[in-house]
Image 1: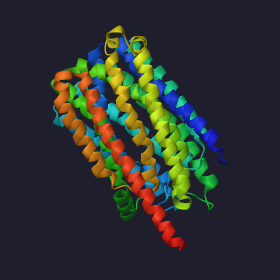
Image 2: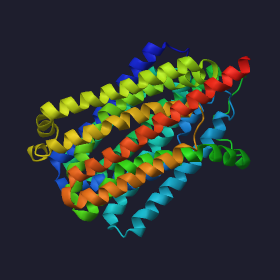
Image 3: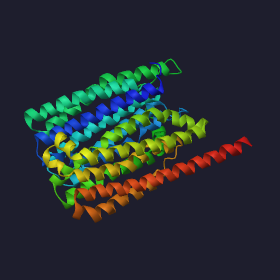
Image 4: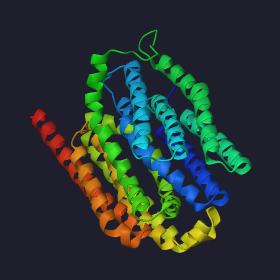
Length: 423
């Protein structure tokens, strides 16, 4: 239960996230090969409806818990809020499906996929314990187990039943199994080992005055991550509106390539986030140098994606999906171009988290969301999937520029304050 080195934490986080991304990719690839592109579109619709809502109610509690170096709130208080938000998320997603008058089958797809995402939301919080105490090896083992079992169950049910709903239910059950027998179990052990007292409260502790105070702290983050997710999914709504489920199916497959680079970004961020918070508190120059390095990491990952998609994108689409998808390889290049500023802003967002500059991100992401919507309105009806990729690029550029500016402002402010204190 002792902490391991930063190098090992990064290595394990990288392996776990890459395997997790590969598992999601294999499931989507199997869906494209076994079922029609319209079914892929339905799966994309289920993700587009549930993901922004679950992301919003997630409130980034895990990252707030990890960077809570002053122990402002207890683990049990964080857990209580997470459980309440999960219930709210499911009710809200179900209401959206009913309000839009989707067919019963589509509503069931959305509901069960939402439940599967809610389990991941709870799992993410327990893995925050592993991140906080720098044991990403345990987190990696959990993600690997979940990914392997999810792929086996999803592809197996899809192959024998040709039914997407049963495959989603199988994934849900796998995620519950790994949550109970791996994540919760090891999170408890870590909390007990690192506790400053002889006992730790593992169950949720409901003190609504504390939950409301924590909600006030984290709701800007919920709005931000919800907007980020809505940014990514807004073009999907517009594709379904202006075109059809087949167009949405093709774009769902193309945009899945963003996940690969994002897993690398996440692995590095998870390893650096706890120390970045300490740097901001104790060594502002190290904080600034780390952010510069993270900027170039995001740029490098994005450029690599552009080069790969530009040279062998059509071959990758044909292998992982079908030959029909390969004709959209030029859209894939645009998707990876849009991913580059997204990766950079994802990295630099950790700086604002460490500085506890939460509410300032809301207007920035609102501006980005409006940009995506406007670009989608202008480009998607005429250019289809290419217009959707252009819309994502426009929104990502706004977010990146704004995040860079806010980090510079925060860094200079901290430098000035420390200079005054030293006089």
